[in-house]
Image 1 (cartoon, rainbow, N blue to C red):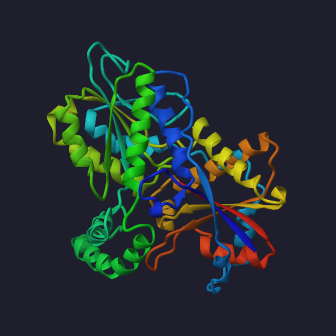
Image 2: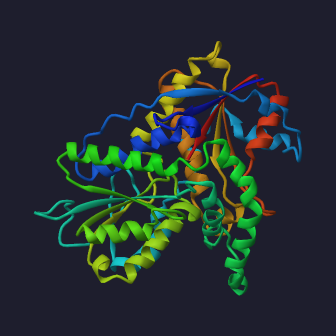
Image 3: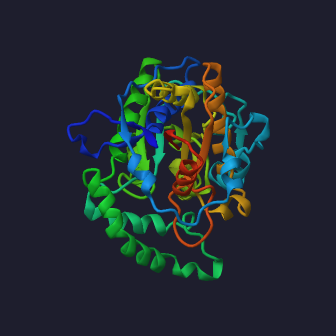
Length: 404
């Protein structure tokens, strides 16, 4: 079975770390449009990044274990789910009680994003007189060297939004994070060593920030763009200090996660809430928060274009299964905590497939989830198990699309 992975390779002097998700290019397009629309209704061109294909045929030899039932595969292997079948979750409702404390009250905006929170002020205009405008891009962060891996993992697992302990056991959060980070560090180092010795996320995010800055200046919005990482440098706290030094008076907060989740955008926004609440300068700053933007036209079209281009390289494109692999979250986040991530991810895939249909592409697709940790149940079906099961069902050609 030939498996093709949709991947990006950004131009860089040290290219050995490159094996990047296609969603970075698409998210650059989506985030640029989202921030730019606050100043102009015109859309900007997507960044042109070369795509290279990776042969992952050896993945099929993975030994089968805990095979998912056939009904699971059938439920996720479909031409695509119709948009009306998805429950419409609006993360704005989850965020309002929390973010309300930062500023006092927020105004909902019915825009193309349908998920924008803005602090109330005397004016809704982004630019007033000599106001200084800033955009804060929030991302996960990643170790830049192999020595950074263990402390990065500690920061990650010390976050209660990543590992949620019962209230009576929360005093164990940091000891548990230390234990997990030490145990996982050797294996994680092997992975980072295979891509050049560190995560490329900072270089990618810095490149996105620069493209956004250029796009805003072209629209006569002389905004400064900042990068704040959740678990490694430059930390969100460091970005906020720079924002204050620069005298920014209006701030757009844009998480670089298209879909909202408690463990990604939610964690970053809760950290930001605490920083704002304790700082008088920030409390008085007008700011806008964009919780999610997975339904943005630019993002959807960029993803569809990437998929369309790769399908054309197959001998029989119409026979290719489009395999979306998303990062998973514990099932309890969705079922007990009300995390909208699963619903937004499914709707995102549906919108991409609808866009492909408009272009005459009617391939079947599958959505699965990867990167589970620990003994708890995560969102299913799992990526590794699903690939094996598809092979058993006779699927010969697969286009794997990392989606974020």
